[in-house]
Length: 113
Length: 111
Image (cartoon, rainbow over all chains, first blue to last red; front, side):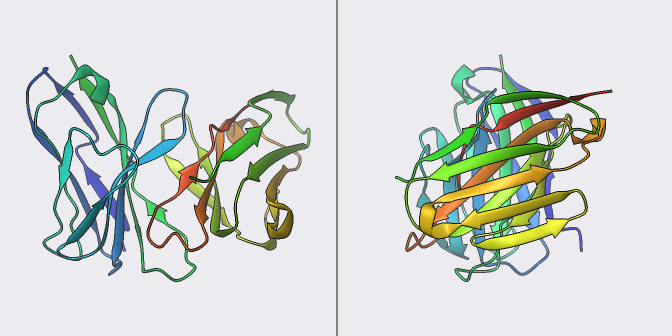
C-alpha cells in the first residue's frame, strides 16, 4: 500500500494564479483531511470530508475549495493565490469515526511570490 | 476549541541523554497522536495513544486521560532523533473535527 500520496511535492506560484493540490489514498478510508503548516507552527485544519460528496470547513478554510467525488481522492484548490497561502500542506486520512489514528502524506511545499 | 500546550519549546541534548516531552490538553480526547517531523518536513507517526502506555524501541509514551496530559520519553537519544515533536489531539465527541496540534518541541541532539 502506498498510503496517502500528495502531488506535487513543491510548487511556486505567482500571486493570482490558481492550482490544485492532489491527494489520494489507497486504504479505503472514509475520512480525509487537509491541513496547512506555517513556519514554526503546528498544523491547522483547512477542510475535511467524511465520505464521497460530503465536505466541511475546518479552522482556516478561507481562500480554498475542496471536492470529494471518490473515496480515494480529495483535491484542494487555490483559486487566487495570495502570499499568505505560502505554507506546507498536508493531507491525511482515517478509516472512519472509530478510535483510529490519522495517516499523513509527505506534504506539498507551496510558495506564492 | 480544545487547547494543546507542549513543553519545553526547545531542548538541546548530548547524544545518549534521556528526555521527557510533555503535552497538556484542555478537554477530553478520543485521539492523541505523537509525531516526529524530520528535517525533510515529513510527519512520522510515533504513537496513537489516547490513554495508557506504549513503547517502541527507545521511545515510549504515556497518556493520563483523566488528568489531561501525555508524556513522550526518549532514552539514549541519537542525532537522528533531532527534529520537531508534535502532540495532536481530537476532542471527544468532536466527530470528524480533525486533529488540533500543539506548537511542538524542537529537539536538537548534539554528537
